Structure formats: structure tokens, C-alpha cells
Image 1 (cartoon, rainbow, N blue to C red):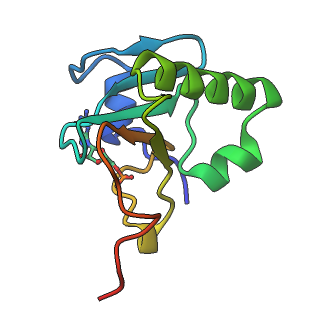
Image 2: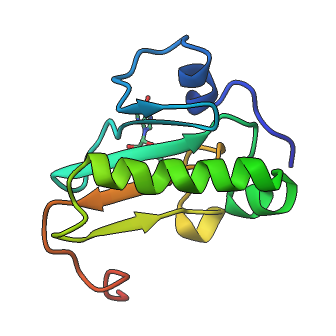
Length: 121
Ligand code: 5GP
């Protein structure tokens, strides 16, 4: 699978679609999810062109990986959810229902969440 330059997050990174920047540095951009699933729901994306967590882990440089993870934990601090708790979700591939093929982490918080996954149906 090749990276799709026309995915929504690529367009946000290029400034072609508007978003409210919560945090930005050399490695990452954080912005609110358009369809929040919790009082706090923010997406953190790397600046590089990576499709999924697997792709990022395999191809990103150690500097990019460290930079991204530091940004992720910094954003959790900015969002003020450290004490109450939060969840980081990275969907990858069809079973996870990943919709946007640019690697991203969801930070969710501000309410009590179920443990790990919704029940099986
Ligand atoms: P995924 O299912 O790929 O892990 O999550 C993609 C997320 O991107 C979804 O939670 C969805 O609400 C969010 N999203 C989709 N389009 C946009 C958009 O144009 N702007 C923002 N801020 N979020 C989006």
C-alpha cells in the first residue's frame, strides 16, 4: 500500500483544510477530532507520510519516533487529563476501522470509559 497524498490529514498538514491547532512542532500536529467521542478527543499526527502505526514503526527514523511520542505525551499534559486519566488509540487496518490512512493517535478523556473494547455483539 502506498501513501495517499490526498487523505484528509495530509490536506490538514498542507494547510488545505482548516483546523484548530492545539499543538505543533517539527514532528507532530495535534487538532480536535471533528466528531468527538468524549469531552476530550484530540488527534495527534506525525508530519511524515506514514499510513499506520505499523508503517510508522517500520519506516520512521528514531528521531521522528521520539519526537512524535514526546509530542503525544506533551499534548496529554496540555489537555489536562493526566490526573483524571486518558486513553490513546491508534487504529490500524480494516478490523480496527481505521478511516484515515495517515498514522494518527486519538487522545480521549474527560469521562469514564469502558475497559479497552466495547463488548462483542
Ligand atoms: P480513524 O478511524 O482513522 O482512527 O479515525 C479518524 C478520525 O478522524 C475519526 O475519529 C474522524 O472523526 C476524524 N476526522 C475525519 N475527518 C476529519 C476532518 O476533516 N477533521 C478532523 N479534525 N477530524 C476528522
